Image (cartoon, rainbow, N blue to C red; front, side):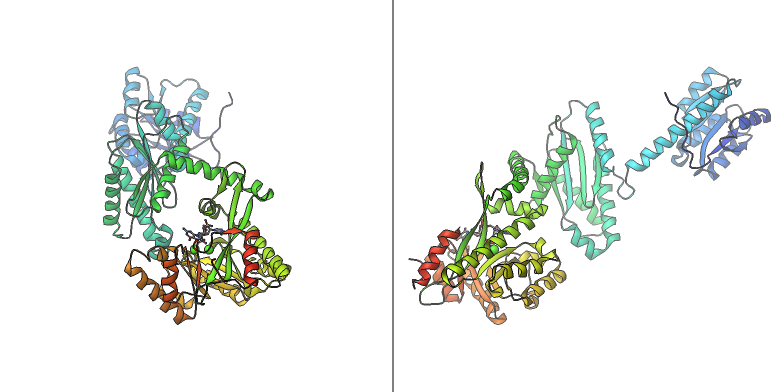
Length: 568
Ligand code: C2E
Ligand code: CA
Ligand code: CA
């Protein structure tokens, strides 16, 4: 086997401790080609040198029988000081008894006296240094300074080793996240956020004392715990939260937890934590309970999600995505009149049948595929508008949905104006629906992007208004033409008298800002009547029509041209 040489980046220092000058000279001569050498003639002198060179000393060659302070005492002192414990000690001795005792005291090796083969001695010295350095590298690289927890790759490896040594134990995989960490990080500053991460690490280690388990800080605000099964997860999360809030005086800290309980031992470690993290993501959307347990439903959803992502490219190539149109009606006339439409994508999957956009849109928003899908939908819609215009001599305005991520695309403006030119439709006939929650993201950049689009002539529609956090103050600054009320306002109309009041309030705002108001999710004549009375201009919903294929929609255009009103 090839002998591994010491890494040559620097010259190491070795301390030779012996009360006999002849021995010191002999040992010095042996190592001085490879190492810098310091000498001590007794234990007391040796300890002083060791203290002074604690950072740089690579090895101590230690005689046992010496005046003033003997070698055992030096070993004992070194062993009880964590800063000195890392320095390997080779004991020089002629007695078998002494070998055992010094190994017990922490010596890493011994060299028998009288000294014989110098090559063997040098090899033992080199090897002791190598081993000590490897051990310290592992310690330094496996644990993160900030939190005191393992780094990810080491953590997964230690979990595997834990499993090997504890074959029967029931184990839990736990993921902990900080709610809205990115935002908090920005507001409180990096240092305060780091202090919180450090305290979470400390609290987790505290919790693990006395139970079998280990923990890791893989990235940003994510923490992993692998521990013996525990019933009271809420208690665990509460204690950690309480500690962090108290010690770092950060009352804003809200933690959430995903638990994959009683893990399947046949599953690779990473996947166990994928499950815990999936549950933790679900906790983000479940207000009220910060602890979510992984279950098989989540697994099925995840499998479906994986499949849909995998099938995406093929579906685009094969034309499985189809654009439907849902009509919108102006209700402020004597008879409701078709005014415009919203383009909504559908996926006709060859094996799964019709897949709802409620399932695949959020998924594609997460991984960016939405950008490609949106562009397909936009082009279909615009080309459809052009064809209606050709057939009927006029086209009606169509809204397309713009995803939040599209707004960060520097080419967006050019792409949309390009489409309009290519198909020869009026820019003002293309409405861009942007969901309210997008505006809370990074309002400045987003407002700029939307402002540019609006100055190109596109109409801007704020979708799902009232579902998020947009303040009135913000509303006055935003470049919008249409306020599209979130469906929940319409849902609340019938059973809640406050619901009507709410709509009236929003209408006051819309009028004040000069915005057109659209209500969607309208399913009954009663709702239409209330909305009409409140002054809502335009209504979209199953009461008039579900989203329908372009061909069917064309019939509505034909009857409009023939002068018929809305619902028949
Ligand atoms: P959205 O933009 O808020 O679209 C309105 C949703 O409400 C549509 O669901 C529509 O079919 C549904 N709806 C319409 N009238 C009624 C009603 O009377 N009652 C009820 N209960 N629902 C009604 P859909 O088509 O399933 O789309 C869901 C969401 O998926 C959309 O919400 C939108 O956020 C997204 N989406 C759909 N197509 C696209 C697209 O092409 N691009 C992007 N980025 N997102 C899309
Ligand atoms: Ca929409
Ligand atoms: Ca909406």
